[in-house]
Length: 331
Image (cartoon, rainbow, N blue to C red; front, side, top):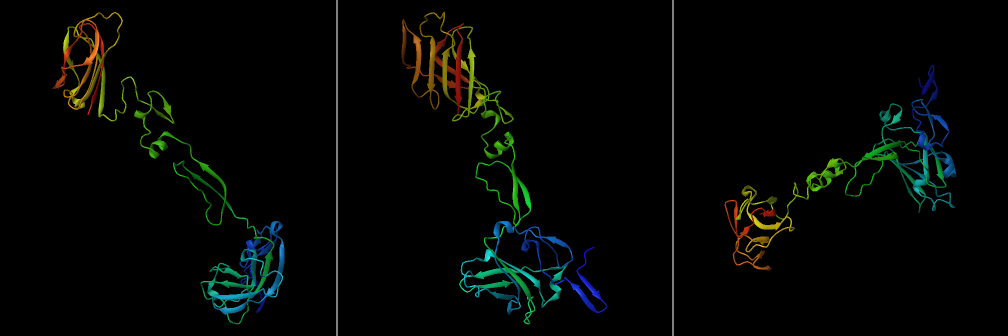
């Protein structure tokens, strides 16, 4: 059990209750008792900083109930060359105007330090009225060679990958010991970009746990800029000028027909070998058809295909027994 005050009869033998010594104002490895009686050990890394000046038993000058000052101007060789970050003030006695601010052995208000190098004045301020005009405060002042290195507790953090730059900073009063970046997964990539999905990945290819379904040979894929695409084959049992399609997919805007295999194909007049139509209504714009008319010829057809109720009238024949590949683009 920690003891911070010893009274013998009416005589106070030991009283630590107003002491303000803190670990961060003590050199690393030194020990003392805090105002609540607990043993504390210094965290100030003196091996890196070293001390230029050590002033003990200073009585700060009273400015107000919220402010006192310490004058360093007598140290003419250094006071204009140092910064506030090099100064440590340790109160060895603090006679408070408002004793109720002592809670659990600690001052329940923050004392901040500022320094004006042109005058050599240290100002110690609080947001509470704690100082007495009788100036019963006593402090030690330490001026270090460099900005003191205070040992801070470590913490770890984690983050998920992003398309934007990520900066990881420690919380106030901590240093970072490690940062863990979560693994890249298909779910994460889909959340970063909605285009990362199965129907945009080649079939059976696994990317970060998402298996593709895109089938370039005619399976499911994005038919942009059309609404949909239908591909198939047809082998007429008799000569025909009609090609039936899936009307439920939309309005046909383009049609391509080609023989699957030219080997063994005989010469036949007015029979389609390959044809393509790209139109807004599949009947109003030029078509490109290859037919046999005594010899293979390529030209612009004067008989355009027409479309109605899921059926194309091609105006030229698909030959019985020949296998054709076709593709229809829908809008």
